[in-house]
Image (tube, rainbow, N blue to C red; front, side, top):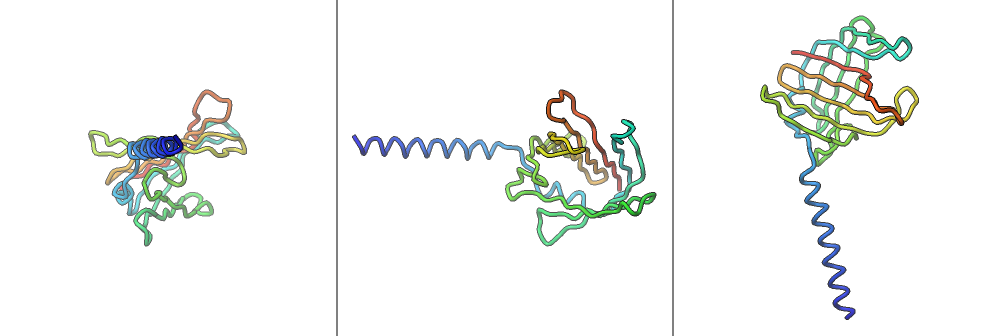
Length: 169
């Protein structure tokens, strides 16, 4: 009887592990080729929500994207011609399995008929010192790159567009 219980337990563990593994394979993931499309120099704008006035504000923005020594990590050099003191460097890092982008879980990846790749990733965090779910939408092609951040504050029903970078080559 003891042998049967051990066998049943082992079979149950193996079944649960295989179900978990199969579900991971079905999870949306980003490819390193998606990231490689954005390497280069971009010009465009940033539009962000000014929480004080409640109105969107748009200004010019430029971006230089460089590969690092790792195929899953890019460096982003942001420059703002009208506000050079705001220039900064950021990164775009893809997890090994492609299921997370900058530690946000990839919830969808879609290739549109025009060839653009639209990636959506989400993570919990804080925005304006309030707990929120943050949603990042990346639209990528050879000549267009858009990063949009939407925020849904805890207890809220609606998503709020926090910012959007729109670039072209």
